[in-house]
Image 1 (cartoon, rainbow, N blue to C red):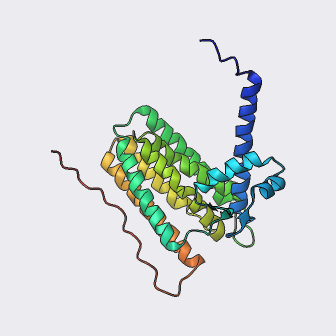
Image 2: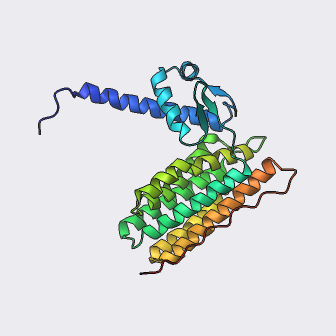
Length: 265
């Protein structure tokens, strides 16, 4: 096949450079959001952020549009982008209940599993545990905070384990919906603010999921995922209550979703 005449190596390099620049801007703005360098309610002008980072407005515009999908920033007509408030206790409960529905379905979809998938999960679990040890070994600040890059690397490893299941469940819509919820980023934002971590609990719960997948036991893997995400939900809501105690009784949280038996017709 003859390559298109209007495509040259120089053009491809420029496209790669632009993509890398956008990703770099995305990471920089995300870290500023997580570290409270940008505060809730603050306006994020594209030109102002571009000057701050020393880049042109184009990659900033693209990065902010991508960050809008995470729910960490919002956009309003004629007002532009604004830093979103952290999720309330009720919003976090709803987010994690929705996540449980999607990811339990994803676990069911990966069966029957093959050796390649088991290998990917084992590797991801090993990397998750290693990143967790880095968090536990890191030096905390006087306020209990930890190094942002260390905690973020841990959450990236946590997300990688879940993504393997979502990417191999045979349903692209489960994957897309999960990405649109961005549960890991909201949990990361919460734990950066609180200084807490659930490394030991989460890595143990991932181990249960992995063990069930290794045995080829779909029912046990779904149960382990439900238990894991229910535990994440309880920990997140406890952190939210401690961070912002309410004078009124806490709202009832949605129960962990239970699978329904499908009847064959």
